[in-house]
Amino acid sequence: MSYIIKTGTPANSSIKPPGFEWGGSDSAGHARGHLLGNQLGGLGDDPRNLVAFYQNPTNHPVMSGFEVRRAVEFGQTVSYTSTSIYQGDSLVPSRVTISAQGSGGFSLDVTVLNRKLGERSVTYVYLEKLTTILKTPKRTYNIGNNHEWEEYQKKYNCEFPSEYKKFINAYGTGCISDFLWILTPFESNEEINIFHRAEIMYASYNYMKDLFPGEYNYSIYPEEGGLLPWGYTDNGDELYFKLTNETVVVFGARYSDFYEYDMGMVEFLYKLFMKKIKCNAFPVSFIDGVLKYNSIKI
Image (cartoon, rainbow, N blue to C red; front, side, top):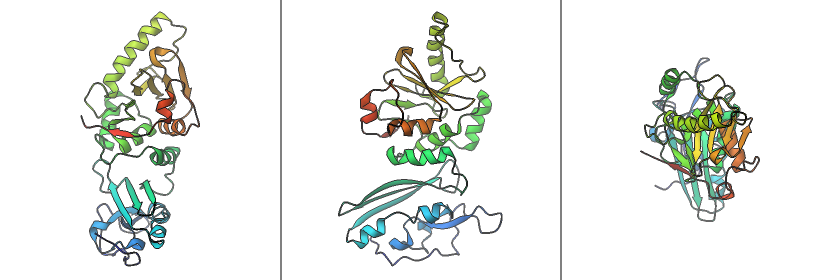
C-alpha cells in the first residue's frame, strides 16, 4: 500500500488500542501511537495503525524523532515497516521495530522501547544501545513472562539479574554470531537450559578447584554470592554473573584465565562490541565480525 506525506490524520479519540488506559491522574500515561506516523500519511482512524504507547518519551519525542519524512521530501521513495512486539501476555507492546529503506540511500533500522518516563535505568539505556548494533530478531522464542520468571525464581531460590531478564525478553532463545550461546530457563534443551548447563559447568569448575584450591576462588550458586552462568562460547569460554551484584565474570576456555567486569550483562555486551572494554578470552574475529543474533526455535 502506498502512502503520501501530509495526508495522515490524528488519532481518533474514540479508538481504544489493546491495553490502552484512558487519561487521569492514575492512568498509565498512554497515547494512541501511530505505527505509521501521521506526518508520513498514517491514518489515525484505522485501528490497525494505533497501539498503546507511553506518551512521554516513547510517542513523543522518540517516535517523532526519526528522519523518514525528510528523506521523502528530498525525493526518495521509502519502503517503511513498523512492527509492535509484545512480551508474554501483555496487550501493550514492549518495543517497536522500525525499518526503512530509501531509493536514494536512506536507511533506518531501530528498536524503540515502550516505557514510562523515569524508567530509564542503566538496564534500559544499555539495552537500547545494544539493539542498535545487535538487532533484535524478527521472531523471538521462549521469552517468558513475569509470572514465569517468578515461578523459576521461587523454584530455584534465586533472583535473576534485571539485565539478564530484559535481554531474554528482547532477544529470546538464541546465540550471538553462531559463537556465544545465551542460556535461558525457558528452554528444555539441556545445551541451553540455564540450570541443566550449569550442572555441567559447575562439575568442571569444582573438579579444577579440588585440584588447585588456591587458584579457584569463586563460589557458585546456590552458595551465597555464587556465580550463575548465562552463556558459553563454541571455544569453551564460560560467562557468569554474580547473583549478589550482577557483576559479569568470564572464564577462559579450560579455565586458562578469569576476567571480571563491574557491570551487568547488557552493558558488558554493548561495551565489548563497541571495544570500550576488552576480554582476551574471545577471538578478534568474534568482536570484529558481523554481529547477528540467531533466534532459535528448538
